[in-house]
Length: 432
Ligand SMILES: [Zn+2]
Figure 1 (cartoon, rainbow, N blue to C red):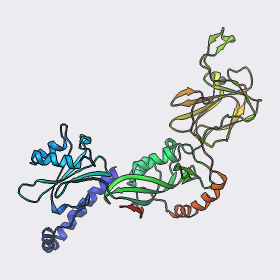
Figure 2 (spheres, rainbow, N blue to C red; figure 1 turned 90 degrees about the vertical axis):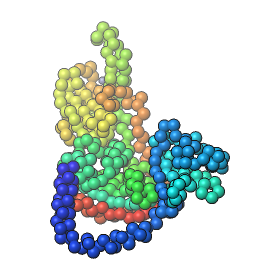
Figure 3 (cartoon, rainbow, N blue to C red; figure 1 turned 60 degrees about the vertical axis):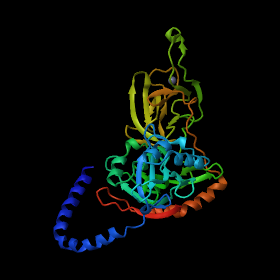
Figure 4 (tube, rainbow, N blue to C red; figure 1 turned 45 degrees about the vertical axis):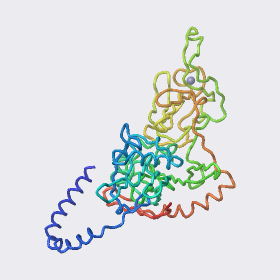
């Protein structure tokens, strides 16, 4: 933010200097300016040349109706009634919503009577009631343009700060963190030096109104020096299902492994009403799932994440806790030995320790605890995001599809936040 303010100040200073030097030139330019005023450029909007009218813009106020607005603009009641009758089949004038913008195109004379009413229920759609000659009403859409862009950056502090410094949309962070890499990278624990490249499309309405990031076509994220590619691919053209896969056609939305140990059995389930003889049959809720296995069996991280606890403590014994994303964390108790340290990034299936009997336990097992938003839940009852694998016949198609996109991605140079932004733009489609 501050660097941006500084830049503005700098430009202002430069502007003042430039002004002094170019004062003479400006006088020369005056004549040209006047010519412009005499012959205004045609400005088209909603399919009308706005220069042919007196344009009045406003928003629907409480109590406003089509009739009230027309009356306010000096149109007589019989005329209003005629328009309402003529337009009612195409446009229900009762649907006007408070706060929505409308435009009146009025005659360029002393009366300025309205000739056309245009209502915009949203940024893309508009309704026209045209009554300058005959009465006709219709709905239409503003032209939409998609512009493909590329961007890259190196993270100094956190992703949103880096994107802000680069002047990139916050929606890009959200899309990358929540839609693409939610199960691969913990965006709250990015490292300085992590870097990214992204190919995305921006949406524009009417050529000029920026309507946000539309879609991310491909991304590359380097976290802890490890590359993570992501390519958007449609796996179901009928249902229009799109998903992100890596350069080896693996789905980026990883579900959790069913269990943290292979070849084991569940010896005790998550049970909030568990009663134990040892405690005189008092309720001792069990907020984990116990997997019995012999001492020394490897314990696996059930999903990618960062180790946030690795310690030996009381009843837990040797345990490890992993944070997977903003929502989920998992914890593994009673290990004979721990293999990972706090801060370490682990991938799904990585060995994080070995089954043991440390802490409060009657036999060798791993107590697996599943945290959702800070509360321990039963992972076997949770609806966890599924990772659909790509089908075999689609895999070849996918690998061909990503070839050119991958080389485009690979050719993007990393931007350092302080340097001026060097995004590339290509108009990819325009809907008129
Ligand atoms: Zn347990």
